[in-house]
Image (cartoon, rainbow, N blue to C red; front, side, top):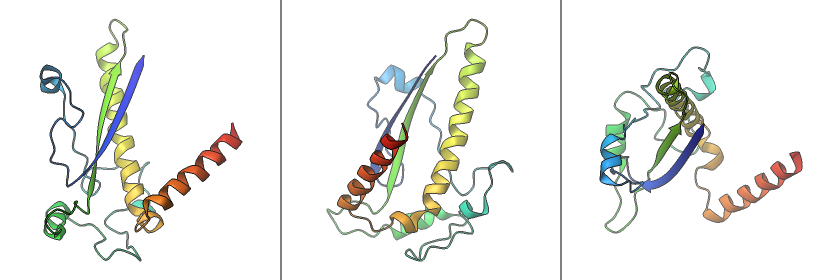
Length: 157
């Protein structure tokens, strides 16, 4: 089994097409799954009130909690000056699964795709609700955090 996940982050609200630059024939066969961290259903086993996007209140960002119609509100908040980049970023993930086992290939690949959708939805809900930990960080702050995290990970292995 081979699983590949490629991620690109682009400014904006997730309207770009084929950001992974796939050949046209492959792009035509690629299903696009839009994840909505507010409205997509969450199983009871995954639900955590601390990552409830409609309940979360940030101490640093007045534009939360998210409610119905949150994407439309984001569009109205996107008031950048000409030439500035968008204050929003969208993660584009290309998940490729190759499971070659006669009779199981199709169902295994579909189940894995379902699990990735679940994983990405839950993860991005958490990241959103942790915004007070990262909102306003500079690139230098992020690089420092990455370096510290890599050091801690190396110590555990």
